[in-house]
Amino acid sequence: MSNVQIPAGKTWFDTHKVHFEDVPISSSDNQGISTTEFLNASEATTTLFDLLGSVAFTPVKNDMLTNVTKVRERQKTAPPGSSETLQSLVKTELASTPKSHKATEGLLWLVRGLDFTAQSLRADLTNNAAVSPTETKPNKELADGFRAAYKNTLAPHHGFLIKPIFSAAMSATPYRKDFYVRLGGQGTDPETVRQALEKWVSALEKRVEILKTFLASKEAKCGARVSMSVQARART
Image (cartoon, rainbow, N blue to C red; front, side):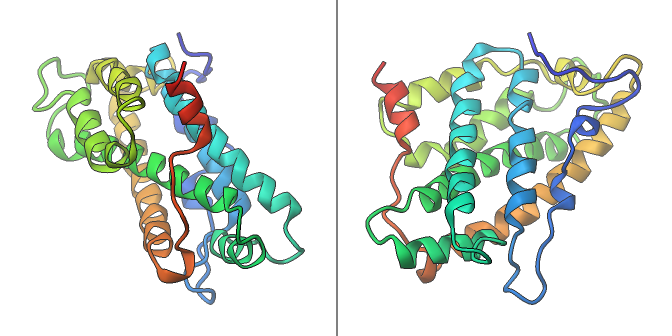
């Protein structure tokens, strides 16, 4: 079961100290994404996998946390003023450490994980736009969106040893009606939860798209590979 404590009448989103909508996007620095706020919002996002209620999601959560740590460690050791935005952090690392791009690779995988999360939840918001969160027979179940999102985002970059681990998590996704209940505290209106989810996903999508565009650009290209944390779990 989840260790996330949601106060009565509140939502999971109210437990976050930093939301993605709070993450500044620079208007003068090529849409630079503020590093500290983005990492804090990403870290808060990992508790979503606790709410899904299955240990099968532990590898997904742990991988995201590992990648947050990689970027944060670079931020701590980078020259002053060189890591205020994620884009500047990456460019500084690539220029100064040609043989080791741990933070850049960590960000690449973190963005992929967040893209997976955003696409999974967007699928429900779109497919069931006119369906009550408590409906027992929605147009599509939550698991359908999670499977499609995994196929679109993470699966193309996972090897045959890793795919079964993440596929097991997709199969452990709870029923949609139960998920919306878990996103709220006692007495919280499920429709309030859905509205909060829409707002949160939209802010996440905007920042993910900016970072995907940057990471695909020539100035951010690096030898992307599966993070070592996932490789280690796949061998066990």
